[in-house]
Structure formats: structure tokens, C-alpha cells
Length: 396
Image (cartoon, rainbow, N blue to C red; front, side, top):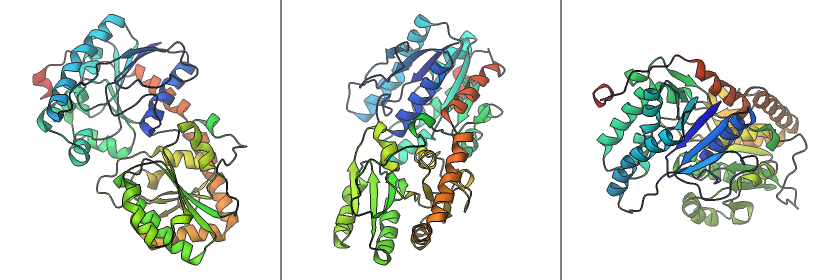
């Protein structure tokens, strides 16, 4: 099978350390492992290609030379012509698989017009996300692209049920949405995985991995740790990653006297993540009470694969992924007292901690691997193809 993988999103560094970067690489590596020939078309290709990608053909999409937000949006829209030309030049393909980006529609329309299966992976409602957290000048155009690309795809892969619900608000997408959440690579989390961060004083370690975005709930985790540490001084908080939240949290951490008990690693290479998770006794996903929680948090799958006891918010997909008291502990989003109580419960009950971690590892390794994600993705090739041409009138 010959597959074109398209990622026109400039915010996704294919060879980087972000969760989206890992997602792209794991899907492509899984496809390669199943014998697929891959042509990767991407906007961010800085860095070194992974081991095993010798036969992945890589094509760079145009860079955006302007720093003006409005001009960048128009340039990104114009890049659709380049994508169409590149696919036409390098095809034919058995499948065109695209990670949905804010301004890209060409790959799915080319797939439909050429009679090729077109699969669109949707990880977020990008129009809303861009408008709320970044800068969006031409929202009308972005919404038009969304309608256009959702209409063109043969199948839409939603990473969560919440994303599936969002997609089903578009009449043209209904009946073609498949939920395929994130996964883990078992090879990264072997049975003998060793802790990589020194802990000479043997402190009980509560951990977090992520880019420290506003929606990750770090203020709640730090506040809960403050409560835990007052009752159990032999504890530390390990925060893996980097982001704006560090500067926002630091004054409060210093004022509370927790500075020497909270360790920020800063940005780390993705290959370091397993060992750092293994350095934790409890791993946290303290998401706040967001009105639109649509994530499929990669960090939580990896916590579980490493056999860590997880404390997480009972919200969105996490309420389905984690069975409270069986594969982790859930608490109400934003409830600092409940989060602290869950952490203290696990600290004081090593047998429970071990049981939850072992059950979590077993569950994700049996049900949530990247190989299973890829198998389900390949099966979409058998979905009925719609060969009618997409027009602006049909998409509007």
C-alpha cells in the first residue's frame, strides 16, 4: 500500500518533542512496520528523521515568510495549490491521510477527485482553538476550510468522542466519523524500565509531563502538592516540560517555601520521557473544569504504560480511559482538596499504588497501542469511496 501522509500545520514539528509530533511519527512508523510505502508532505521538517524511516520519502511544504498574521493566513491558504501539485506529481496513492490543519483542504479534495481513499485525522476544533488561544484574523475563511475539508474526506478520524461530537455538527461529516484515540508504543515502556532522575533522599515523587499550557491544570497540581507536602514532607513534585506556566507559578512556589521540593526539568527530548515517568510514584493529569474538553491526552496513556498510578480529573475521555479505583484515581476537575487526598491515599497505600499501576499498564498494552491505531486506520481503506467532485457551493 502506498500512502501519502500530509501535515500542513506549521505548529507540528514532525521531528520535535511535542505530543502532536510523537503522534505523527508513531502513526507513520506503524504504517511502515506494516509494509506501507510512505510519502510525507509536511511544513515543519527541522531535525533528524527517526531510525527506520530510511524509505520514507519526505517532501517539504512551503514556508510562511511573513510575520504578519493576516498575511500568513493568506499564504497558508495559497499553499493548497502547492499541495495539489505535489500530490499529482508524486502519486498515485492507495490512501491519502491528512492531519487536519487550519488552512488545508487540498489533500482531501485531491483524494476525492482522484478516486483515492481520503482519511482526515482531527485532533482539535482548530478554529475555536486558534481564536481562543492564538490569533485568528479571517475566521470566516477558516470555518469555510473546515466545512470544505470535512465534506471532502471519505473518513474522519476523531481522537476522542468529544471531537466526534464536534465533527457531527457538520452535516457533511455525519456517518463518516470514526473514533480512534491515541496510543502507546510498548517498546518505549519495557518491563525493566528504570528511573532516570536521581532521588538520593528517596522522596515520594508526584509527576507531570506536558507543555504546561493553561488547560493542563498545573496551578491546581501545585496547590494540591502544597497541601500534600505540609502533611508529608518527604515528597517532591517533578514537572517535565516547559511553558509559560513556569514563570507564572514560580513566585507562588517561592513564597510557599516549596522551591527546593519542586523540580522543573525544562524541555526534554521525547526519548527521555519514559525514564522520567519511571522516576515518579504517582503521575498527574489535573485538568481544570473546561467547558469543551476534547483531548485524548498522550501523557496519560504513557503514564499508564509505565505502570504508574495515575491521579486525573474526571473529565472527557479520561472518565472513559481510567476506571476509578481500578486503573487510577479520578477526582472532580479543579477540586484541589480531592486531588491532594488522592495523592495522599496513594502515598500511604503502596499496595494500592502498585495494583493501580499494574492494572493500568495491562489495560493500555492490551487495548491502546499505536499498532492497533494503525490497523484501524488501514481498515478505513475499505470504507465506501465518494468520487463526486467537491465544489465550493457544496462545501459552503
